[in-house]
Image 1 (cartoon, one colour):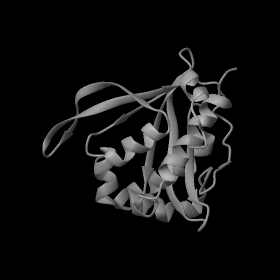
Image 2 (tube, rainbow, N blue to C red):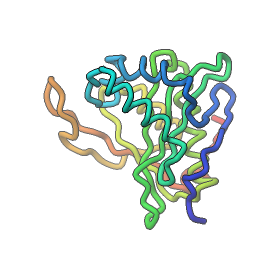
Image 3 (cartoon, rainbow, N blue to C red):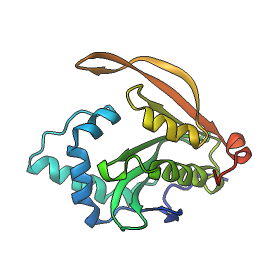
Length: 191
């Protein structure tokens, strides 16, 4: 089965719904992207907010549903209907049957297990519906909360990219983690 990233599904869990982005998500996305903790945890550079930057980001999020080679989904908290984060499958390598996974959660989506559930939902979709064989990610040592969520979803550390990120405090390594389709089939997905 060949992966079809052009389909943008809605995936429902007990506490979160993964769905395509809508225009109403942007105020919460903007708030998350302005949060210094989000910038730090994702290893991003701060955005210099002006009208042009805001327009570029609105366009970026407005075109996620049009991308045939990646899957960007908003994470909505089921109980409130609020946008709390995003999960992404990108850097698709069709020949290898692999892609990258990344996530971002605003302050309202952290420390409640929503990221773990969202990760499991998207990883399951990647293996069960897209036919992927491997999903990989990188995590920084200053984000142990994310690493725990990834481990709960079945990701295993495979190695370290030394000095992968430059910070004001100096270079930081990134742990490379991955999960394979065979490992996914073998784990208890209800955990």
